[in-house]
Image (tube, rainbow, N blue to C red; front, side, top):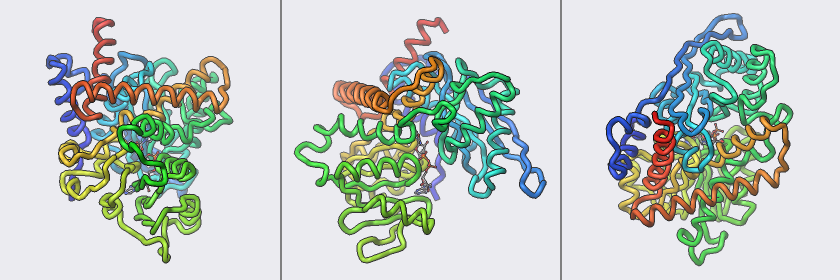
Length: 418
Ligand code: NAD
């Protein structure tokens, strides 16, 4: 089994960029050492009255460009190493897409699948309570959001806990909320849309002369990001040929009917039950399909040194954070694959969170069309800037995105005199 070390992976990529920027060790520390780490043990009661504890974290990486911003993940693997790497990537991501935020991330080390709805609510409220006691969150300080296994409903519970404790209405303290409590129209599909805009902007380079129905796509991960991506691309006429989730995948003979697969998953819990047109495949098999685009929308470390040589996709879109390790990155680059990196490809989510925060602070309510137009503009501008930098430096899109993100953060650090 390959052991993934997400923070080490981040530092490896960072150091390559730092060398190009000729960073001193002192300046490098702004990227390798988070400004603040909050660590605690949450206690919550199970439905049978017994008490349980779970490790919980909030890592505030860098706020030179604006308040800390980042999701909260509920997952058994959400340890400090993982949360640190995700917080660091958030700082770079916000800088790449040029929104005035720093980076942070939260995590609770639990498996939500083992919790009842009431237990999940108690954990969510306990997290917000503990963070509030340590003065972690604030509308101008640190703004959490959803991530893996955390939903708009969980954001609503956390908001309610915060507002109850502080005795004031402050919806902008948290984003990714349901519409009823200040959420943003279009937020649920903003991450996947952002990835699609990045692909569209790169279309002349990646798919010259091809129409959507010529372009085959396999998607690992069928949660929020992966399923929304699949549905939109299916509607636009692209050929989705395989999708998977943690239980395995479906490989369709010609083209997947994504809405049908979603229905099957809802009814049976699995994406595919096997039929003449749909075969059941493993996640490893999905990764190795000969497709134009492989979309990684599950967890980090999906492609690593041991399986990178088997990857045949020409383009890899990282909707997940850190799905390709640095060793795999090098192997894929040598093989000529183009990777649209996480800090660009999935930045649509935090960009929409920024819109939600503006809306909450101004009291305005944006039309869905306005959200989508502004998202498209932000994503296409960021993609073009990253692409041009990669061309100029003759480097990968990931290296270019790191260079841009680091430079923008360094500019803010310098002008502040830190
Ligand atoms: P989610 O919990 O809704 O979905 C995750 C999906 O991955 C599920 O379908 C799950 O079954 C699947 N999965 C888990 N392990 C797998 C495995 N080994 N093989 C195949 N599939 C597996 O989470 P999400 O919100 O869609 O996030 C997915 C990724 O995208 C994460 O890395 C997250 O950090 C990143 N991301 C999400 C957003 C967002 O707005 N949702 C924004 C930015 C980045």
